[in-house]
Image (cartoon, rainbow, N blue to C red; front, top):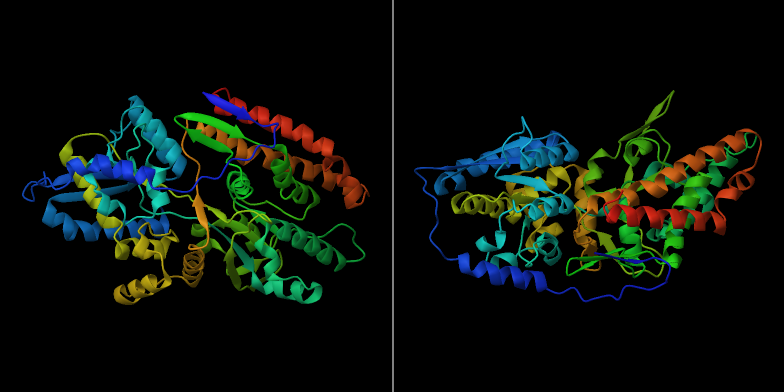
Length: 495
């Protein structure tokens, strides 16, 4: 059942973040703890893991798997094999094919990486193990509360997704090209702490770059872009006191009050249409590399892809960077997105499920998790691991090589975690389809309308004249109604 709230400016009442899920998980888990291990080192259990890691991330994961097999795994009687399925979508397709028994599909692995929406689908099919049977309260309390809460997707509140590596969003900036702009205009890094400040700065940058070529009108450059527009909706609304997807007792309420939606529209769509923001390549780090943007909001894992130089058509030059906290809406609450796949365990027998959880507990020990995070940019999931001091200790003891951008990204987030709340919406049926509406509905319209504005400017119109039809109250209202209808349809399984 979906409750739909979109025409009233009704704010979601903030609830204290409790430990209801943690308590429920612990209560179910106590029965299974303290029992004799079902494993026999003389007859090892073999576990297959599917994941989506590639490149350096896969190398780091494989190295940890090998270490486990040669140490703890050998002692306990567990042997782990990891297989990359390619991309996240490739992994999800492989899992769905296995569950449905599609001809030619591989058998379900013992463990696989999964985002909450996919895990929810698999759980509804009854194919996931109850991890609460293998974890007691003392073990659960080692993990960040919100990470455990996200994994409690079962109807009875027990744990199905084991947190293994998380991420949030940061703002990354091309320092080299920022400095002359800031010196000329008085722009301040402090201005980039709010979305409204980012929008104002982007306008100033567009106007400043346009003024560099007075004989060519309307050739200003975009300043900012963002990956994952769906996160902009989910976190932006949460910062403004609204939970866009509110799930309680299995029922979904969609909250899209007009006033808050307008603030999101005027701080994404309007600057996109006017050319203050931009999105050109596959990711915004690509746009920084081509010199089309100076800054973007993206995942902590994107830090390693921030370019070392700008490559123009006829020249290239080295750039430095700044890592900053992701912007928050002015006057809003300090929420940041919580994202990153966890691991789920396929329902099988006690021996395999027990072995899988033992591997996951080892993988998420502070030293092991930080070794993985130091390469991948993922945040560790245990409380004790989320600090610069612990990261420095692990780097020293294990002689790790951590890229400066990844190090700065992780330590920036560690420094902010005490003051901010990480948030992700609860899972619900058709959640993936609803998220696609958030990701593409406004972004696609902004790109299309920006093309129309640019075409009008090529015909001699000024920016304000060319963009005027697209940024009116009436234009917002038309989009708003269309957006609400599309979101309702997708969440209802009709999209």
